Amino acid sequence: MELILRTERDTRKFRLLALLVAVAGMYLRQNRVDIWPAVYLAAAYLIYLTLFGPLVLPRVHSPSIVYGMTVVDAVALTVALRIAGGLDSALFILLPLFIIYYSIYLGYASSLFAATVFSLGYVGVYFWLGHQASAGPIIAVQVPFLYLLAVFSGHLAGRRLQERKEKEELQELIRLEKGAKSLIEVARGLTKSLELAETLTEVANTAPSLLGFNHSLVALMEDNDRLRAR
Image 1 (cartoon, rainbow, N blue to C red):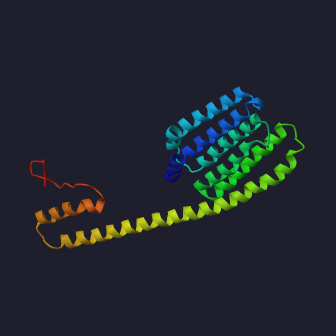
Image 2 (cartoon, rainbow, N blue to C red):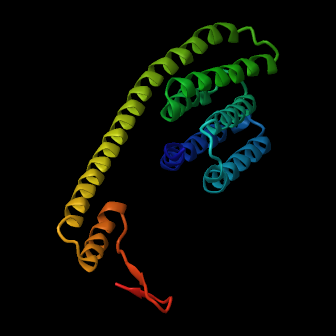
Image 3 (cartoon, rainbow, N blue to C red):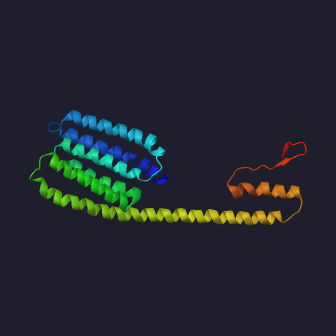
């Protein structure tokens, strides 16, 4: 889940850029676009981007949230295509970009899911606009293209995720090795002397490195039930 949080935060600029591209495209074709629905959609998506990352995502503890994010983006882009006037809109370029973007999260799983929901939205626009005769060949070419892109990007992202996992496992092994060495040092220190004071001093000196703390403190219970720091 930490990876998802970090990825969403690092790529938020990309999603804002996608929104900017969509707004610019609608502005250039404003004579063919219902401007107010476009403004409402852009404003709603901007609010979603602003609130979702900082407020919603940190409170979710399941990677499945990625699929919900994909559906929201697919619905938003489908409506944008409809407002822009059809399947020949330049907004189509955002579909493959979002598929590549979502492959970063979970590899094949998220990229193929993104290809599916965006393809459904793309085909949905076709029926929404009344079965445009010229759109059939477009769908026959572009939808398979989205799946091919999903497989390719999923493969690359899967390798990246595997490399990250191996790196984290290596770091964990290094941490365990350091912990084992610290335990050995503690054992050696405890066997140097049978004096209680020296033994406690050794424990206090080695505990921070062993447990990852900055400081350590040993307290002794005196006869009057008072703690005395050592």
